[in-house]
Length: 264
Image (cartoon, rainbow, N blue to C red; front, side):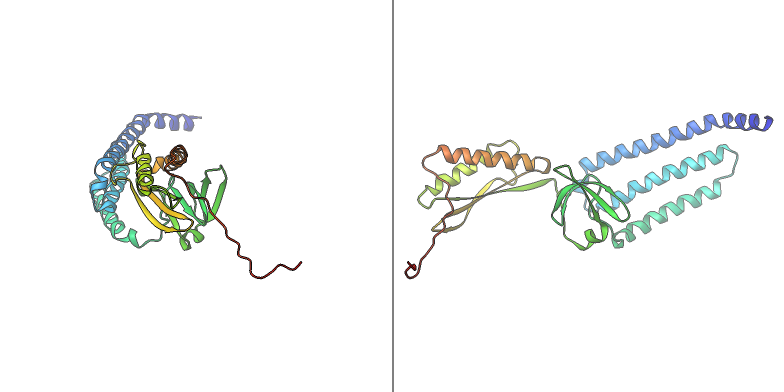
């Protein structure tokens, strides 16, 4: 019983030390996290050495843990002058090694929360383990894909680029007013607030044959608006072309040629 009381009294004596250490560690990590968010939002797009920025902030996170541990040892009465210098030097050397070594290490080209498409599966990355990557598709299904297959296959990551291009491919009748068709399609894209002005929307005639004239409109939206904007733009295109008698979408035609006489 006396031993238990001594242990409780010793732990209670360390209570303030533990709380102060936690306060210091949490405050330091919060400050670094805020600085990282600010740098990522305002400076990340202008900096060429993005990997260097990541290594710097990662090193700061590790230094917070190291300094917290050194402060705890110092409060407990240990001399940390020598080990403190050694620990900081090790962290800095590790940061330099990581900066030059990380590009040569195999890694998956996506992170949690990214929208990717691989092997015909399109969805959001929900978890990454040693052997599998879990992807939630937009219809609610969970797909587990072995990482070995991911590394060997084609991966489209839509989260690395802030903007995405919308393509509106349609075919109009040959006898339509092509200039007006192009103008209407351009107005539909330009009138949507989600469509970016840089680069500006553009319409090009891609081909022409007896079935009609192929026309494609290009515009850019934010990645998060791409799916809804494309759907609304197609709806507006159909409505505009239906309501204007001077333009008309072309219908696919199929010709059947008969050779010789049919057996009676």
